[in-house]
Length: 276
Image (cartoon, rainbow, N blue to C red; front, side):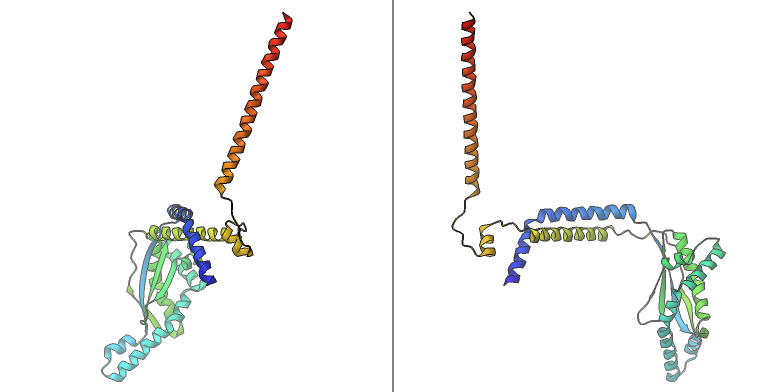
């Protein structure tokens, strides 16, 4: 029951401050839009898709005439799938990416580093298949395309020179130069900014209420200290009494000032008669 009452109290507090929460959420949305428009760079992507296979699997598949040989070919393909994660880990090493950078620099006269290649490349496998895809994302369409084309050569060479060339790779979908940039994702980022602003505002409202030790009502006083409340003085009566006292003081001051003014005038007239 206490938990339910506390939750209900927090909900009422949040609903009471909905204007503040909405304003902060809108500020978060505008901040996310401003950040995306001014600090997020346009990117361009090129992809290459490979098929991993054992070196003699294709020949065996084309010549297979019975069930036993088909089972053998299936086991070879399963071996290629099993080894795929190992090769992908090799493609993510600094040594391999540095080799790709050197070959790319030599061929295109560029000055790429292994770190640039590694940060631009993403590798993912296609579930339950021996296919894997290389995605190259940079700020320049030509750079993404050049790296992807170089990987079409470097990856099969690396697989042929590893594990005695037992597993190879063939390019099934060649790289293409990106004609348009990737979308900046304004709706998604603005939605994240809105939610972040709302969460921060709600947290502020709740923390402010929890840290406020003032007693705001008679019910809260009775609940906190167990003291019976005999009566309360409405706030409007106090304001009325204060205003009446203030007006009476001002009236008294004005009457005194009028009396002083009259007495000063009488004294001035008396002095004028004596002079005559």
